Image: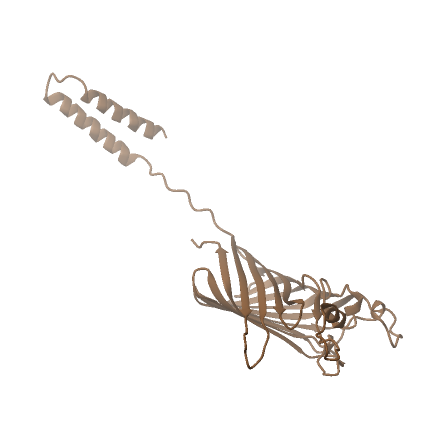
Length: 355
């Protein structure tokens, strides 16, 4: 700072001397040249101020939102069908931390959507999902391998019903009240809800693949609504009961086992990407029961600045969940659940800029 002030003073002196009356043409010019040379030398010797180093970024964040609308209209359509409308939204939020040997990845996914069809005077829910996942990792002496702790939580926002066609003599169309009376409950908030906390290792051989194996995983299955506890395989308060009702089942089931979760993310370019997650859970407390399997896929294709095509699938195999898959309404004890959506709509993404 002192050198900078000295330099400024020397430049001021040069300017003042240049304004003095000239008595000897040669002398002022010589003095001014000497002062300028001295100023130039001072500038050369002055330490260069370096720009401050950019503050390291340990967090990277992203938020993607989708709003999709669909509509089908029929008029004198010989093949038949019904006018219908769909509206659905999707949020995918990520917050990831990385510093030195530690990483911490967090993801929240929210799905919600409605369907209205002219043949049923009911607004039906066709998408409903809350999924929160958090993974922590710390480097081990082995390359690409980290000690890990993982947490995940899954449930839905509100109740979902299966609307069966009401019994009718054919003379009149079923009313809204008839549809409501014939419906059956399928799910509700915290009915079910799955919570898992696991300890193990995280393997990340490439930037697009991660595999988390947690041989020590404790979990809770929560079914708050008594009407759904039998459907989701909850245990009886009194195992000696032969014909129990919903209130005789426990609302919470503790699980202890091993979980394997594999995540892959492929980004072809800025407009096309594919993500998938496969999760397997084996319950040590029920060694004869098959593992629970979930498999989620999402293909995202950005067609314009704010419009995108999205294909998503969700597969679940839970041997403890009873499914109504027979025509006679007989509940089977296991089966594959599958859901698929192909949607087009508004898409908006916010992400941390890369340096």
